[in-house]
Structures are given as structure tokens and as C-alpha cells.
Length: 360
Ligand SMILES: *Cc1c(COP(=O)(O)O)cnc(C)c1O
Image (cartoon, rainbow, N blue to C red; front, side, top):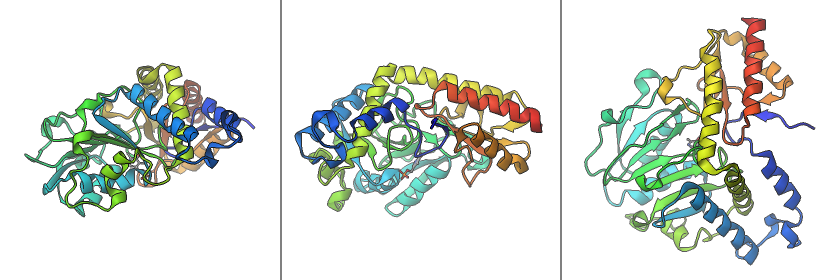
């Protein structure tokens, strides 16, 4: 059976090469006689797999030595809670930037633990832009500043990094991590669920500056304390071993592609190709301010919502799936992460053109 072009926002498509390698190694990992799924997380083989994955991620993102890399579980959603629990450090206020559905969830979770100052919000224009840094009303001596680098549902992405001085910058990079080079040293903490642009669901990556670990007040339950996981090398309890292994294969694949700078070039090309077509017609529409448009998640509406089901059915017949927009915004959404090849975007644009011709 031929593989489809999968435009899902997450869990999302993985590189076919990675899936084939995982399949080849599924039953007998490199002569060990066992599947990675069956290995002890404390055994030599799996320890090697995890160490290689961390080393490759460090290389790809150029992560400085004073940052810890954690392989955790619980998704980005658990980080919405672990971040205030660990980073408030006795301070009463944290600053959050409100850019849409995911920022909203992060804010709601933080409110359980502290006063949240919404330093900037794009609610006035239905979350269709990234508020300019000059308009952020930051709290002096806030515990940290949190923002969402890419709003997966709204399709709004920051193409710049805020400068928060001595106040740690905390970023939800779930849906655009590894899509472009970033300067990790500008952040106090970066987190991302793996199932968008890294690998299988079940793994969450946290990159945290060393001096922010172990300062939680009061001391959290062990599983919720970054310190526990740092000290145990992410093996305090059984980690999501198979997800770490597949993420590691993706890191190796990214290195073979030429790393994140090459991915950025390809991601810009793919996104420009799709936006270029959407903008050139009256039939389709993307509502996001041009300079803040996401390269990863591209929501769009058809001129007549009554055509949505017909559109999706035709897409499926042509081997393109998961284009239905999030229930909160309707319409369509094409998620085109690293693993989506240019040929998939080209096939979508061909279909957009054909559909408009037949229904416009
Ligand atoms: C998917 C997503 C989340 C939630 O991730 P879970 O792993 O399901 O908790 C949070 N933030 C962003 C930006 C996302 O795309």
C-alpha cells in the first residue's frame, strides 16, 4: 500500500526513511536479539541509544554545556504545570504572552500556582498575530516570561526571539522545535512534546539552564521536580524507551539532511509555496498577519464552508489526509513539519487549484 501525505498537526508524519529503519530493527536491534521495546532502560544497549539521542540533539540545536536535556513524559501539558512549580522560586508573578489556544492552556495551568501577568495578548484580533515585543508589559522581577513559539492551532509563529534580560525566557516549542536554528542561550527553558516535529507521542523534551534546577519552593513531589530527573539522567523511573529510540533515529535523519539550517531553508520554501497559492486566489484564505505566519501549521478556509466535506473527501481520494482544521477555528489546516516533503506540498497545491477550478 502506498503511503499517504499526512498533514496531521500531531501526532504527525515521520520521515519514511526513519519508519523503515525502525521496521528493519524492530525484532532484532542490531544483533542484540531483542527489540528496543524489550530492553532494560538501564542496560548497556538502551543507555547507548539514549546517550546518542541526547548527543545528536545537542549537536543539532547547538545546546550549550550549562543546559540539561531531559527526556520526560506527560506531554507539553505537564510542563504547563512543572514550569511554575519549578521556576517560580518563591516569586509571586510570572509573565505570559497570550497568542491563542496553547498559550491559553499554559496560562490557565499557571494560575493555580501564581499571579499571572498577561504581558501581551493577541485576543483583540482573534489571535492572528504575534504581539510586538515593544508592546509587552513585563513585570519587573517576574519569575519568568513564557511564550508559545508556534501556535499549532492558529498558525501564528514568532520569527524572532524576545529579549528578557535577567528574567528567564521560557518557551513552548512543541510545534516548531528543530524547524530552524535557534540560540538556546537566550532561553531559560525550552520544552516540546515530541509528537509534532520530533517523533512518537509519549516523549517530552525539556532543555533547561542548569542554574534554574533545584530552586523550587516549596520542594515539589519528586516526579515533578526537574532536579530529580537531572540527577537521574532522565532515568528516575522507566522512560518512554521506544519513543526515545525513534526520536534518536529522527535526529540522525536530520543530521543526514544537513541539520536545522537546511530544514529551515526547506521549510521556508514549502511554506512560501503554499501561502503563495492561497494568497493568489479569492477562493482560499489564511487570516494570519503575513510576517507572523507559521511555517509549520497553515490554517485556511474555503470561500464556502459548505464545500468543506467535499474538499476533504477529494483530498483523501488523492492520498492527502488530516487536512480538517481544528474544531475551534474550522476550515482546513495543513501541517507541514520537517517530515513533510516538498512533493506533498506540491500535491496539495495541485489539488487546491483543481478544486477551485471545479467549485469556484
Ligand atoms: C500539541 C501542543 C501542546 C500539547 O501537547 P501534549 O503533548 O498533548 O500535552 C502544547 N503546546 C503546543 C504548542 C502544542 O502544539
